[in-house]
Length: 131
Ligand SMILES: [Zn+2]
Image (cartoon, rainbow, N blue to C red; front, side, top):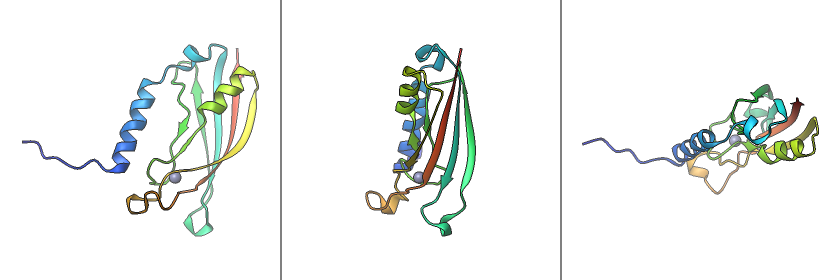
């Protein structure tokens, strides 16, 4: 008999994430006028002792998934940010760039579920290139 392991809250959210990503439609399908989407991110922990700020860039080409949930760089549960609505309104207004701040709403760990949020700060700039 197969050995069974209890699905942790983190596993559960990871499975959900990859399922949603797999089920997402492509950018060219949803936003046919879009050539390229670039998301520049700077992530800053809530307190300096929690680590350094980091920058990274995600590039989405037209044939890729229109899935703009950014995973948290910490091992938090149900974390990350979702820029899907921001990208959607940007494209529907044919705007080229928008910047803002979002905080990770994940839970720090299994013991602090519903108690302590991650709050990793995400400074983002979304840049859209159109055809
Ligand atoms: Zn987080």
